[in-house]
Amino acid sequence: MLTLNTKIDSTEKIDGELVLPFELREKSRLRAALASGEEVAVFTVRGTVLRNGDLLKGDDGRIVKITAAAESTYRVDCNTPRDLLRCAFHLGNRHTQAQVDSDTKSGFLRIRKDTVLKDMLEGLGATVTEEQAPFEPESGAYGGGHHHAEDRHHALAPIPLRQRIHRPSDKEA
Image 1 (cartoon, helix red, strand yellow):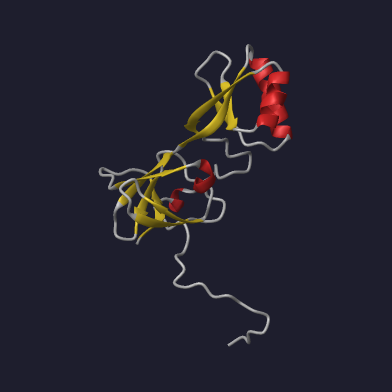
Image 2 (cartoon, rainbow, N blue to C red):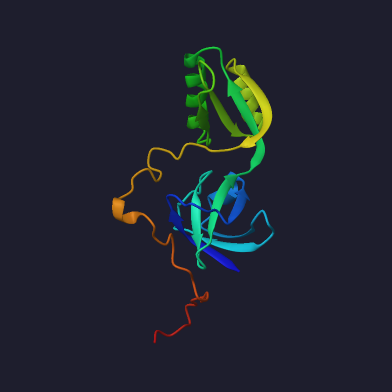
């Protein structure tokens, strides 16, 4: 099985594509299948989020591109930037992950499908439209925005050779 654990910035050749919804792109240990059907293991440092377009290098040198899968979301549009900001505030107050985008004058938000949140947003005057779309929420104020130059092209996490369960009765060797 191909093991992916090194993030790279660019490549001339892509050898495979891994299409994942956001929920799976947040996981630090993952077994999945490439678009070709080949099984892969993904090992990342806890807290790493794979983003659409990220490139991962496999243990055999192959490069795999991460693609955000379309999933059930709500698009939140408002008449004014102020109204959109109010909606973002109320979503944040509920610790809801949200994507912020700007293809319109006042921009829009995208959230995971949740009928309770839909009702709240419509109550705030937003137009909420269900759509199948890639979900790329903000990483948050403390989420992974700072990197050092020497951090590039490194293994994201060690690959466990085998899992060992530690029990209280185990004696230290």
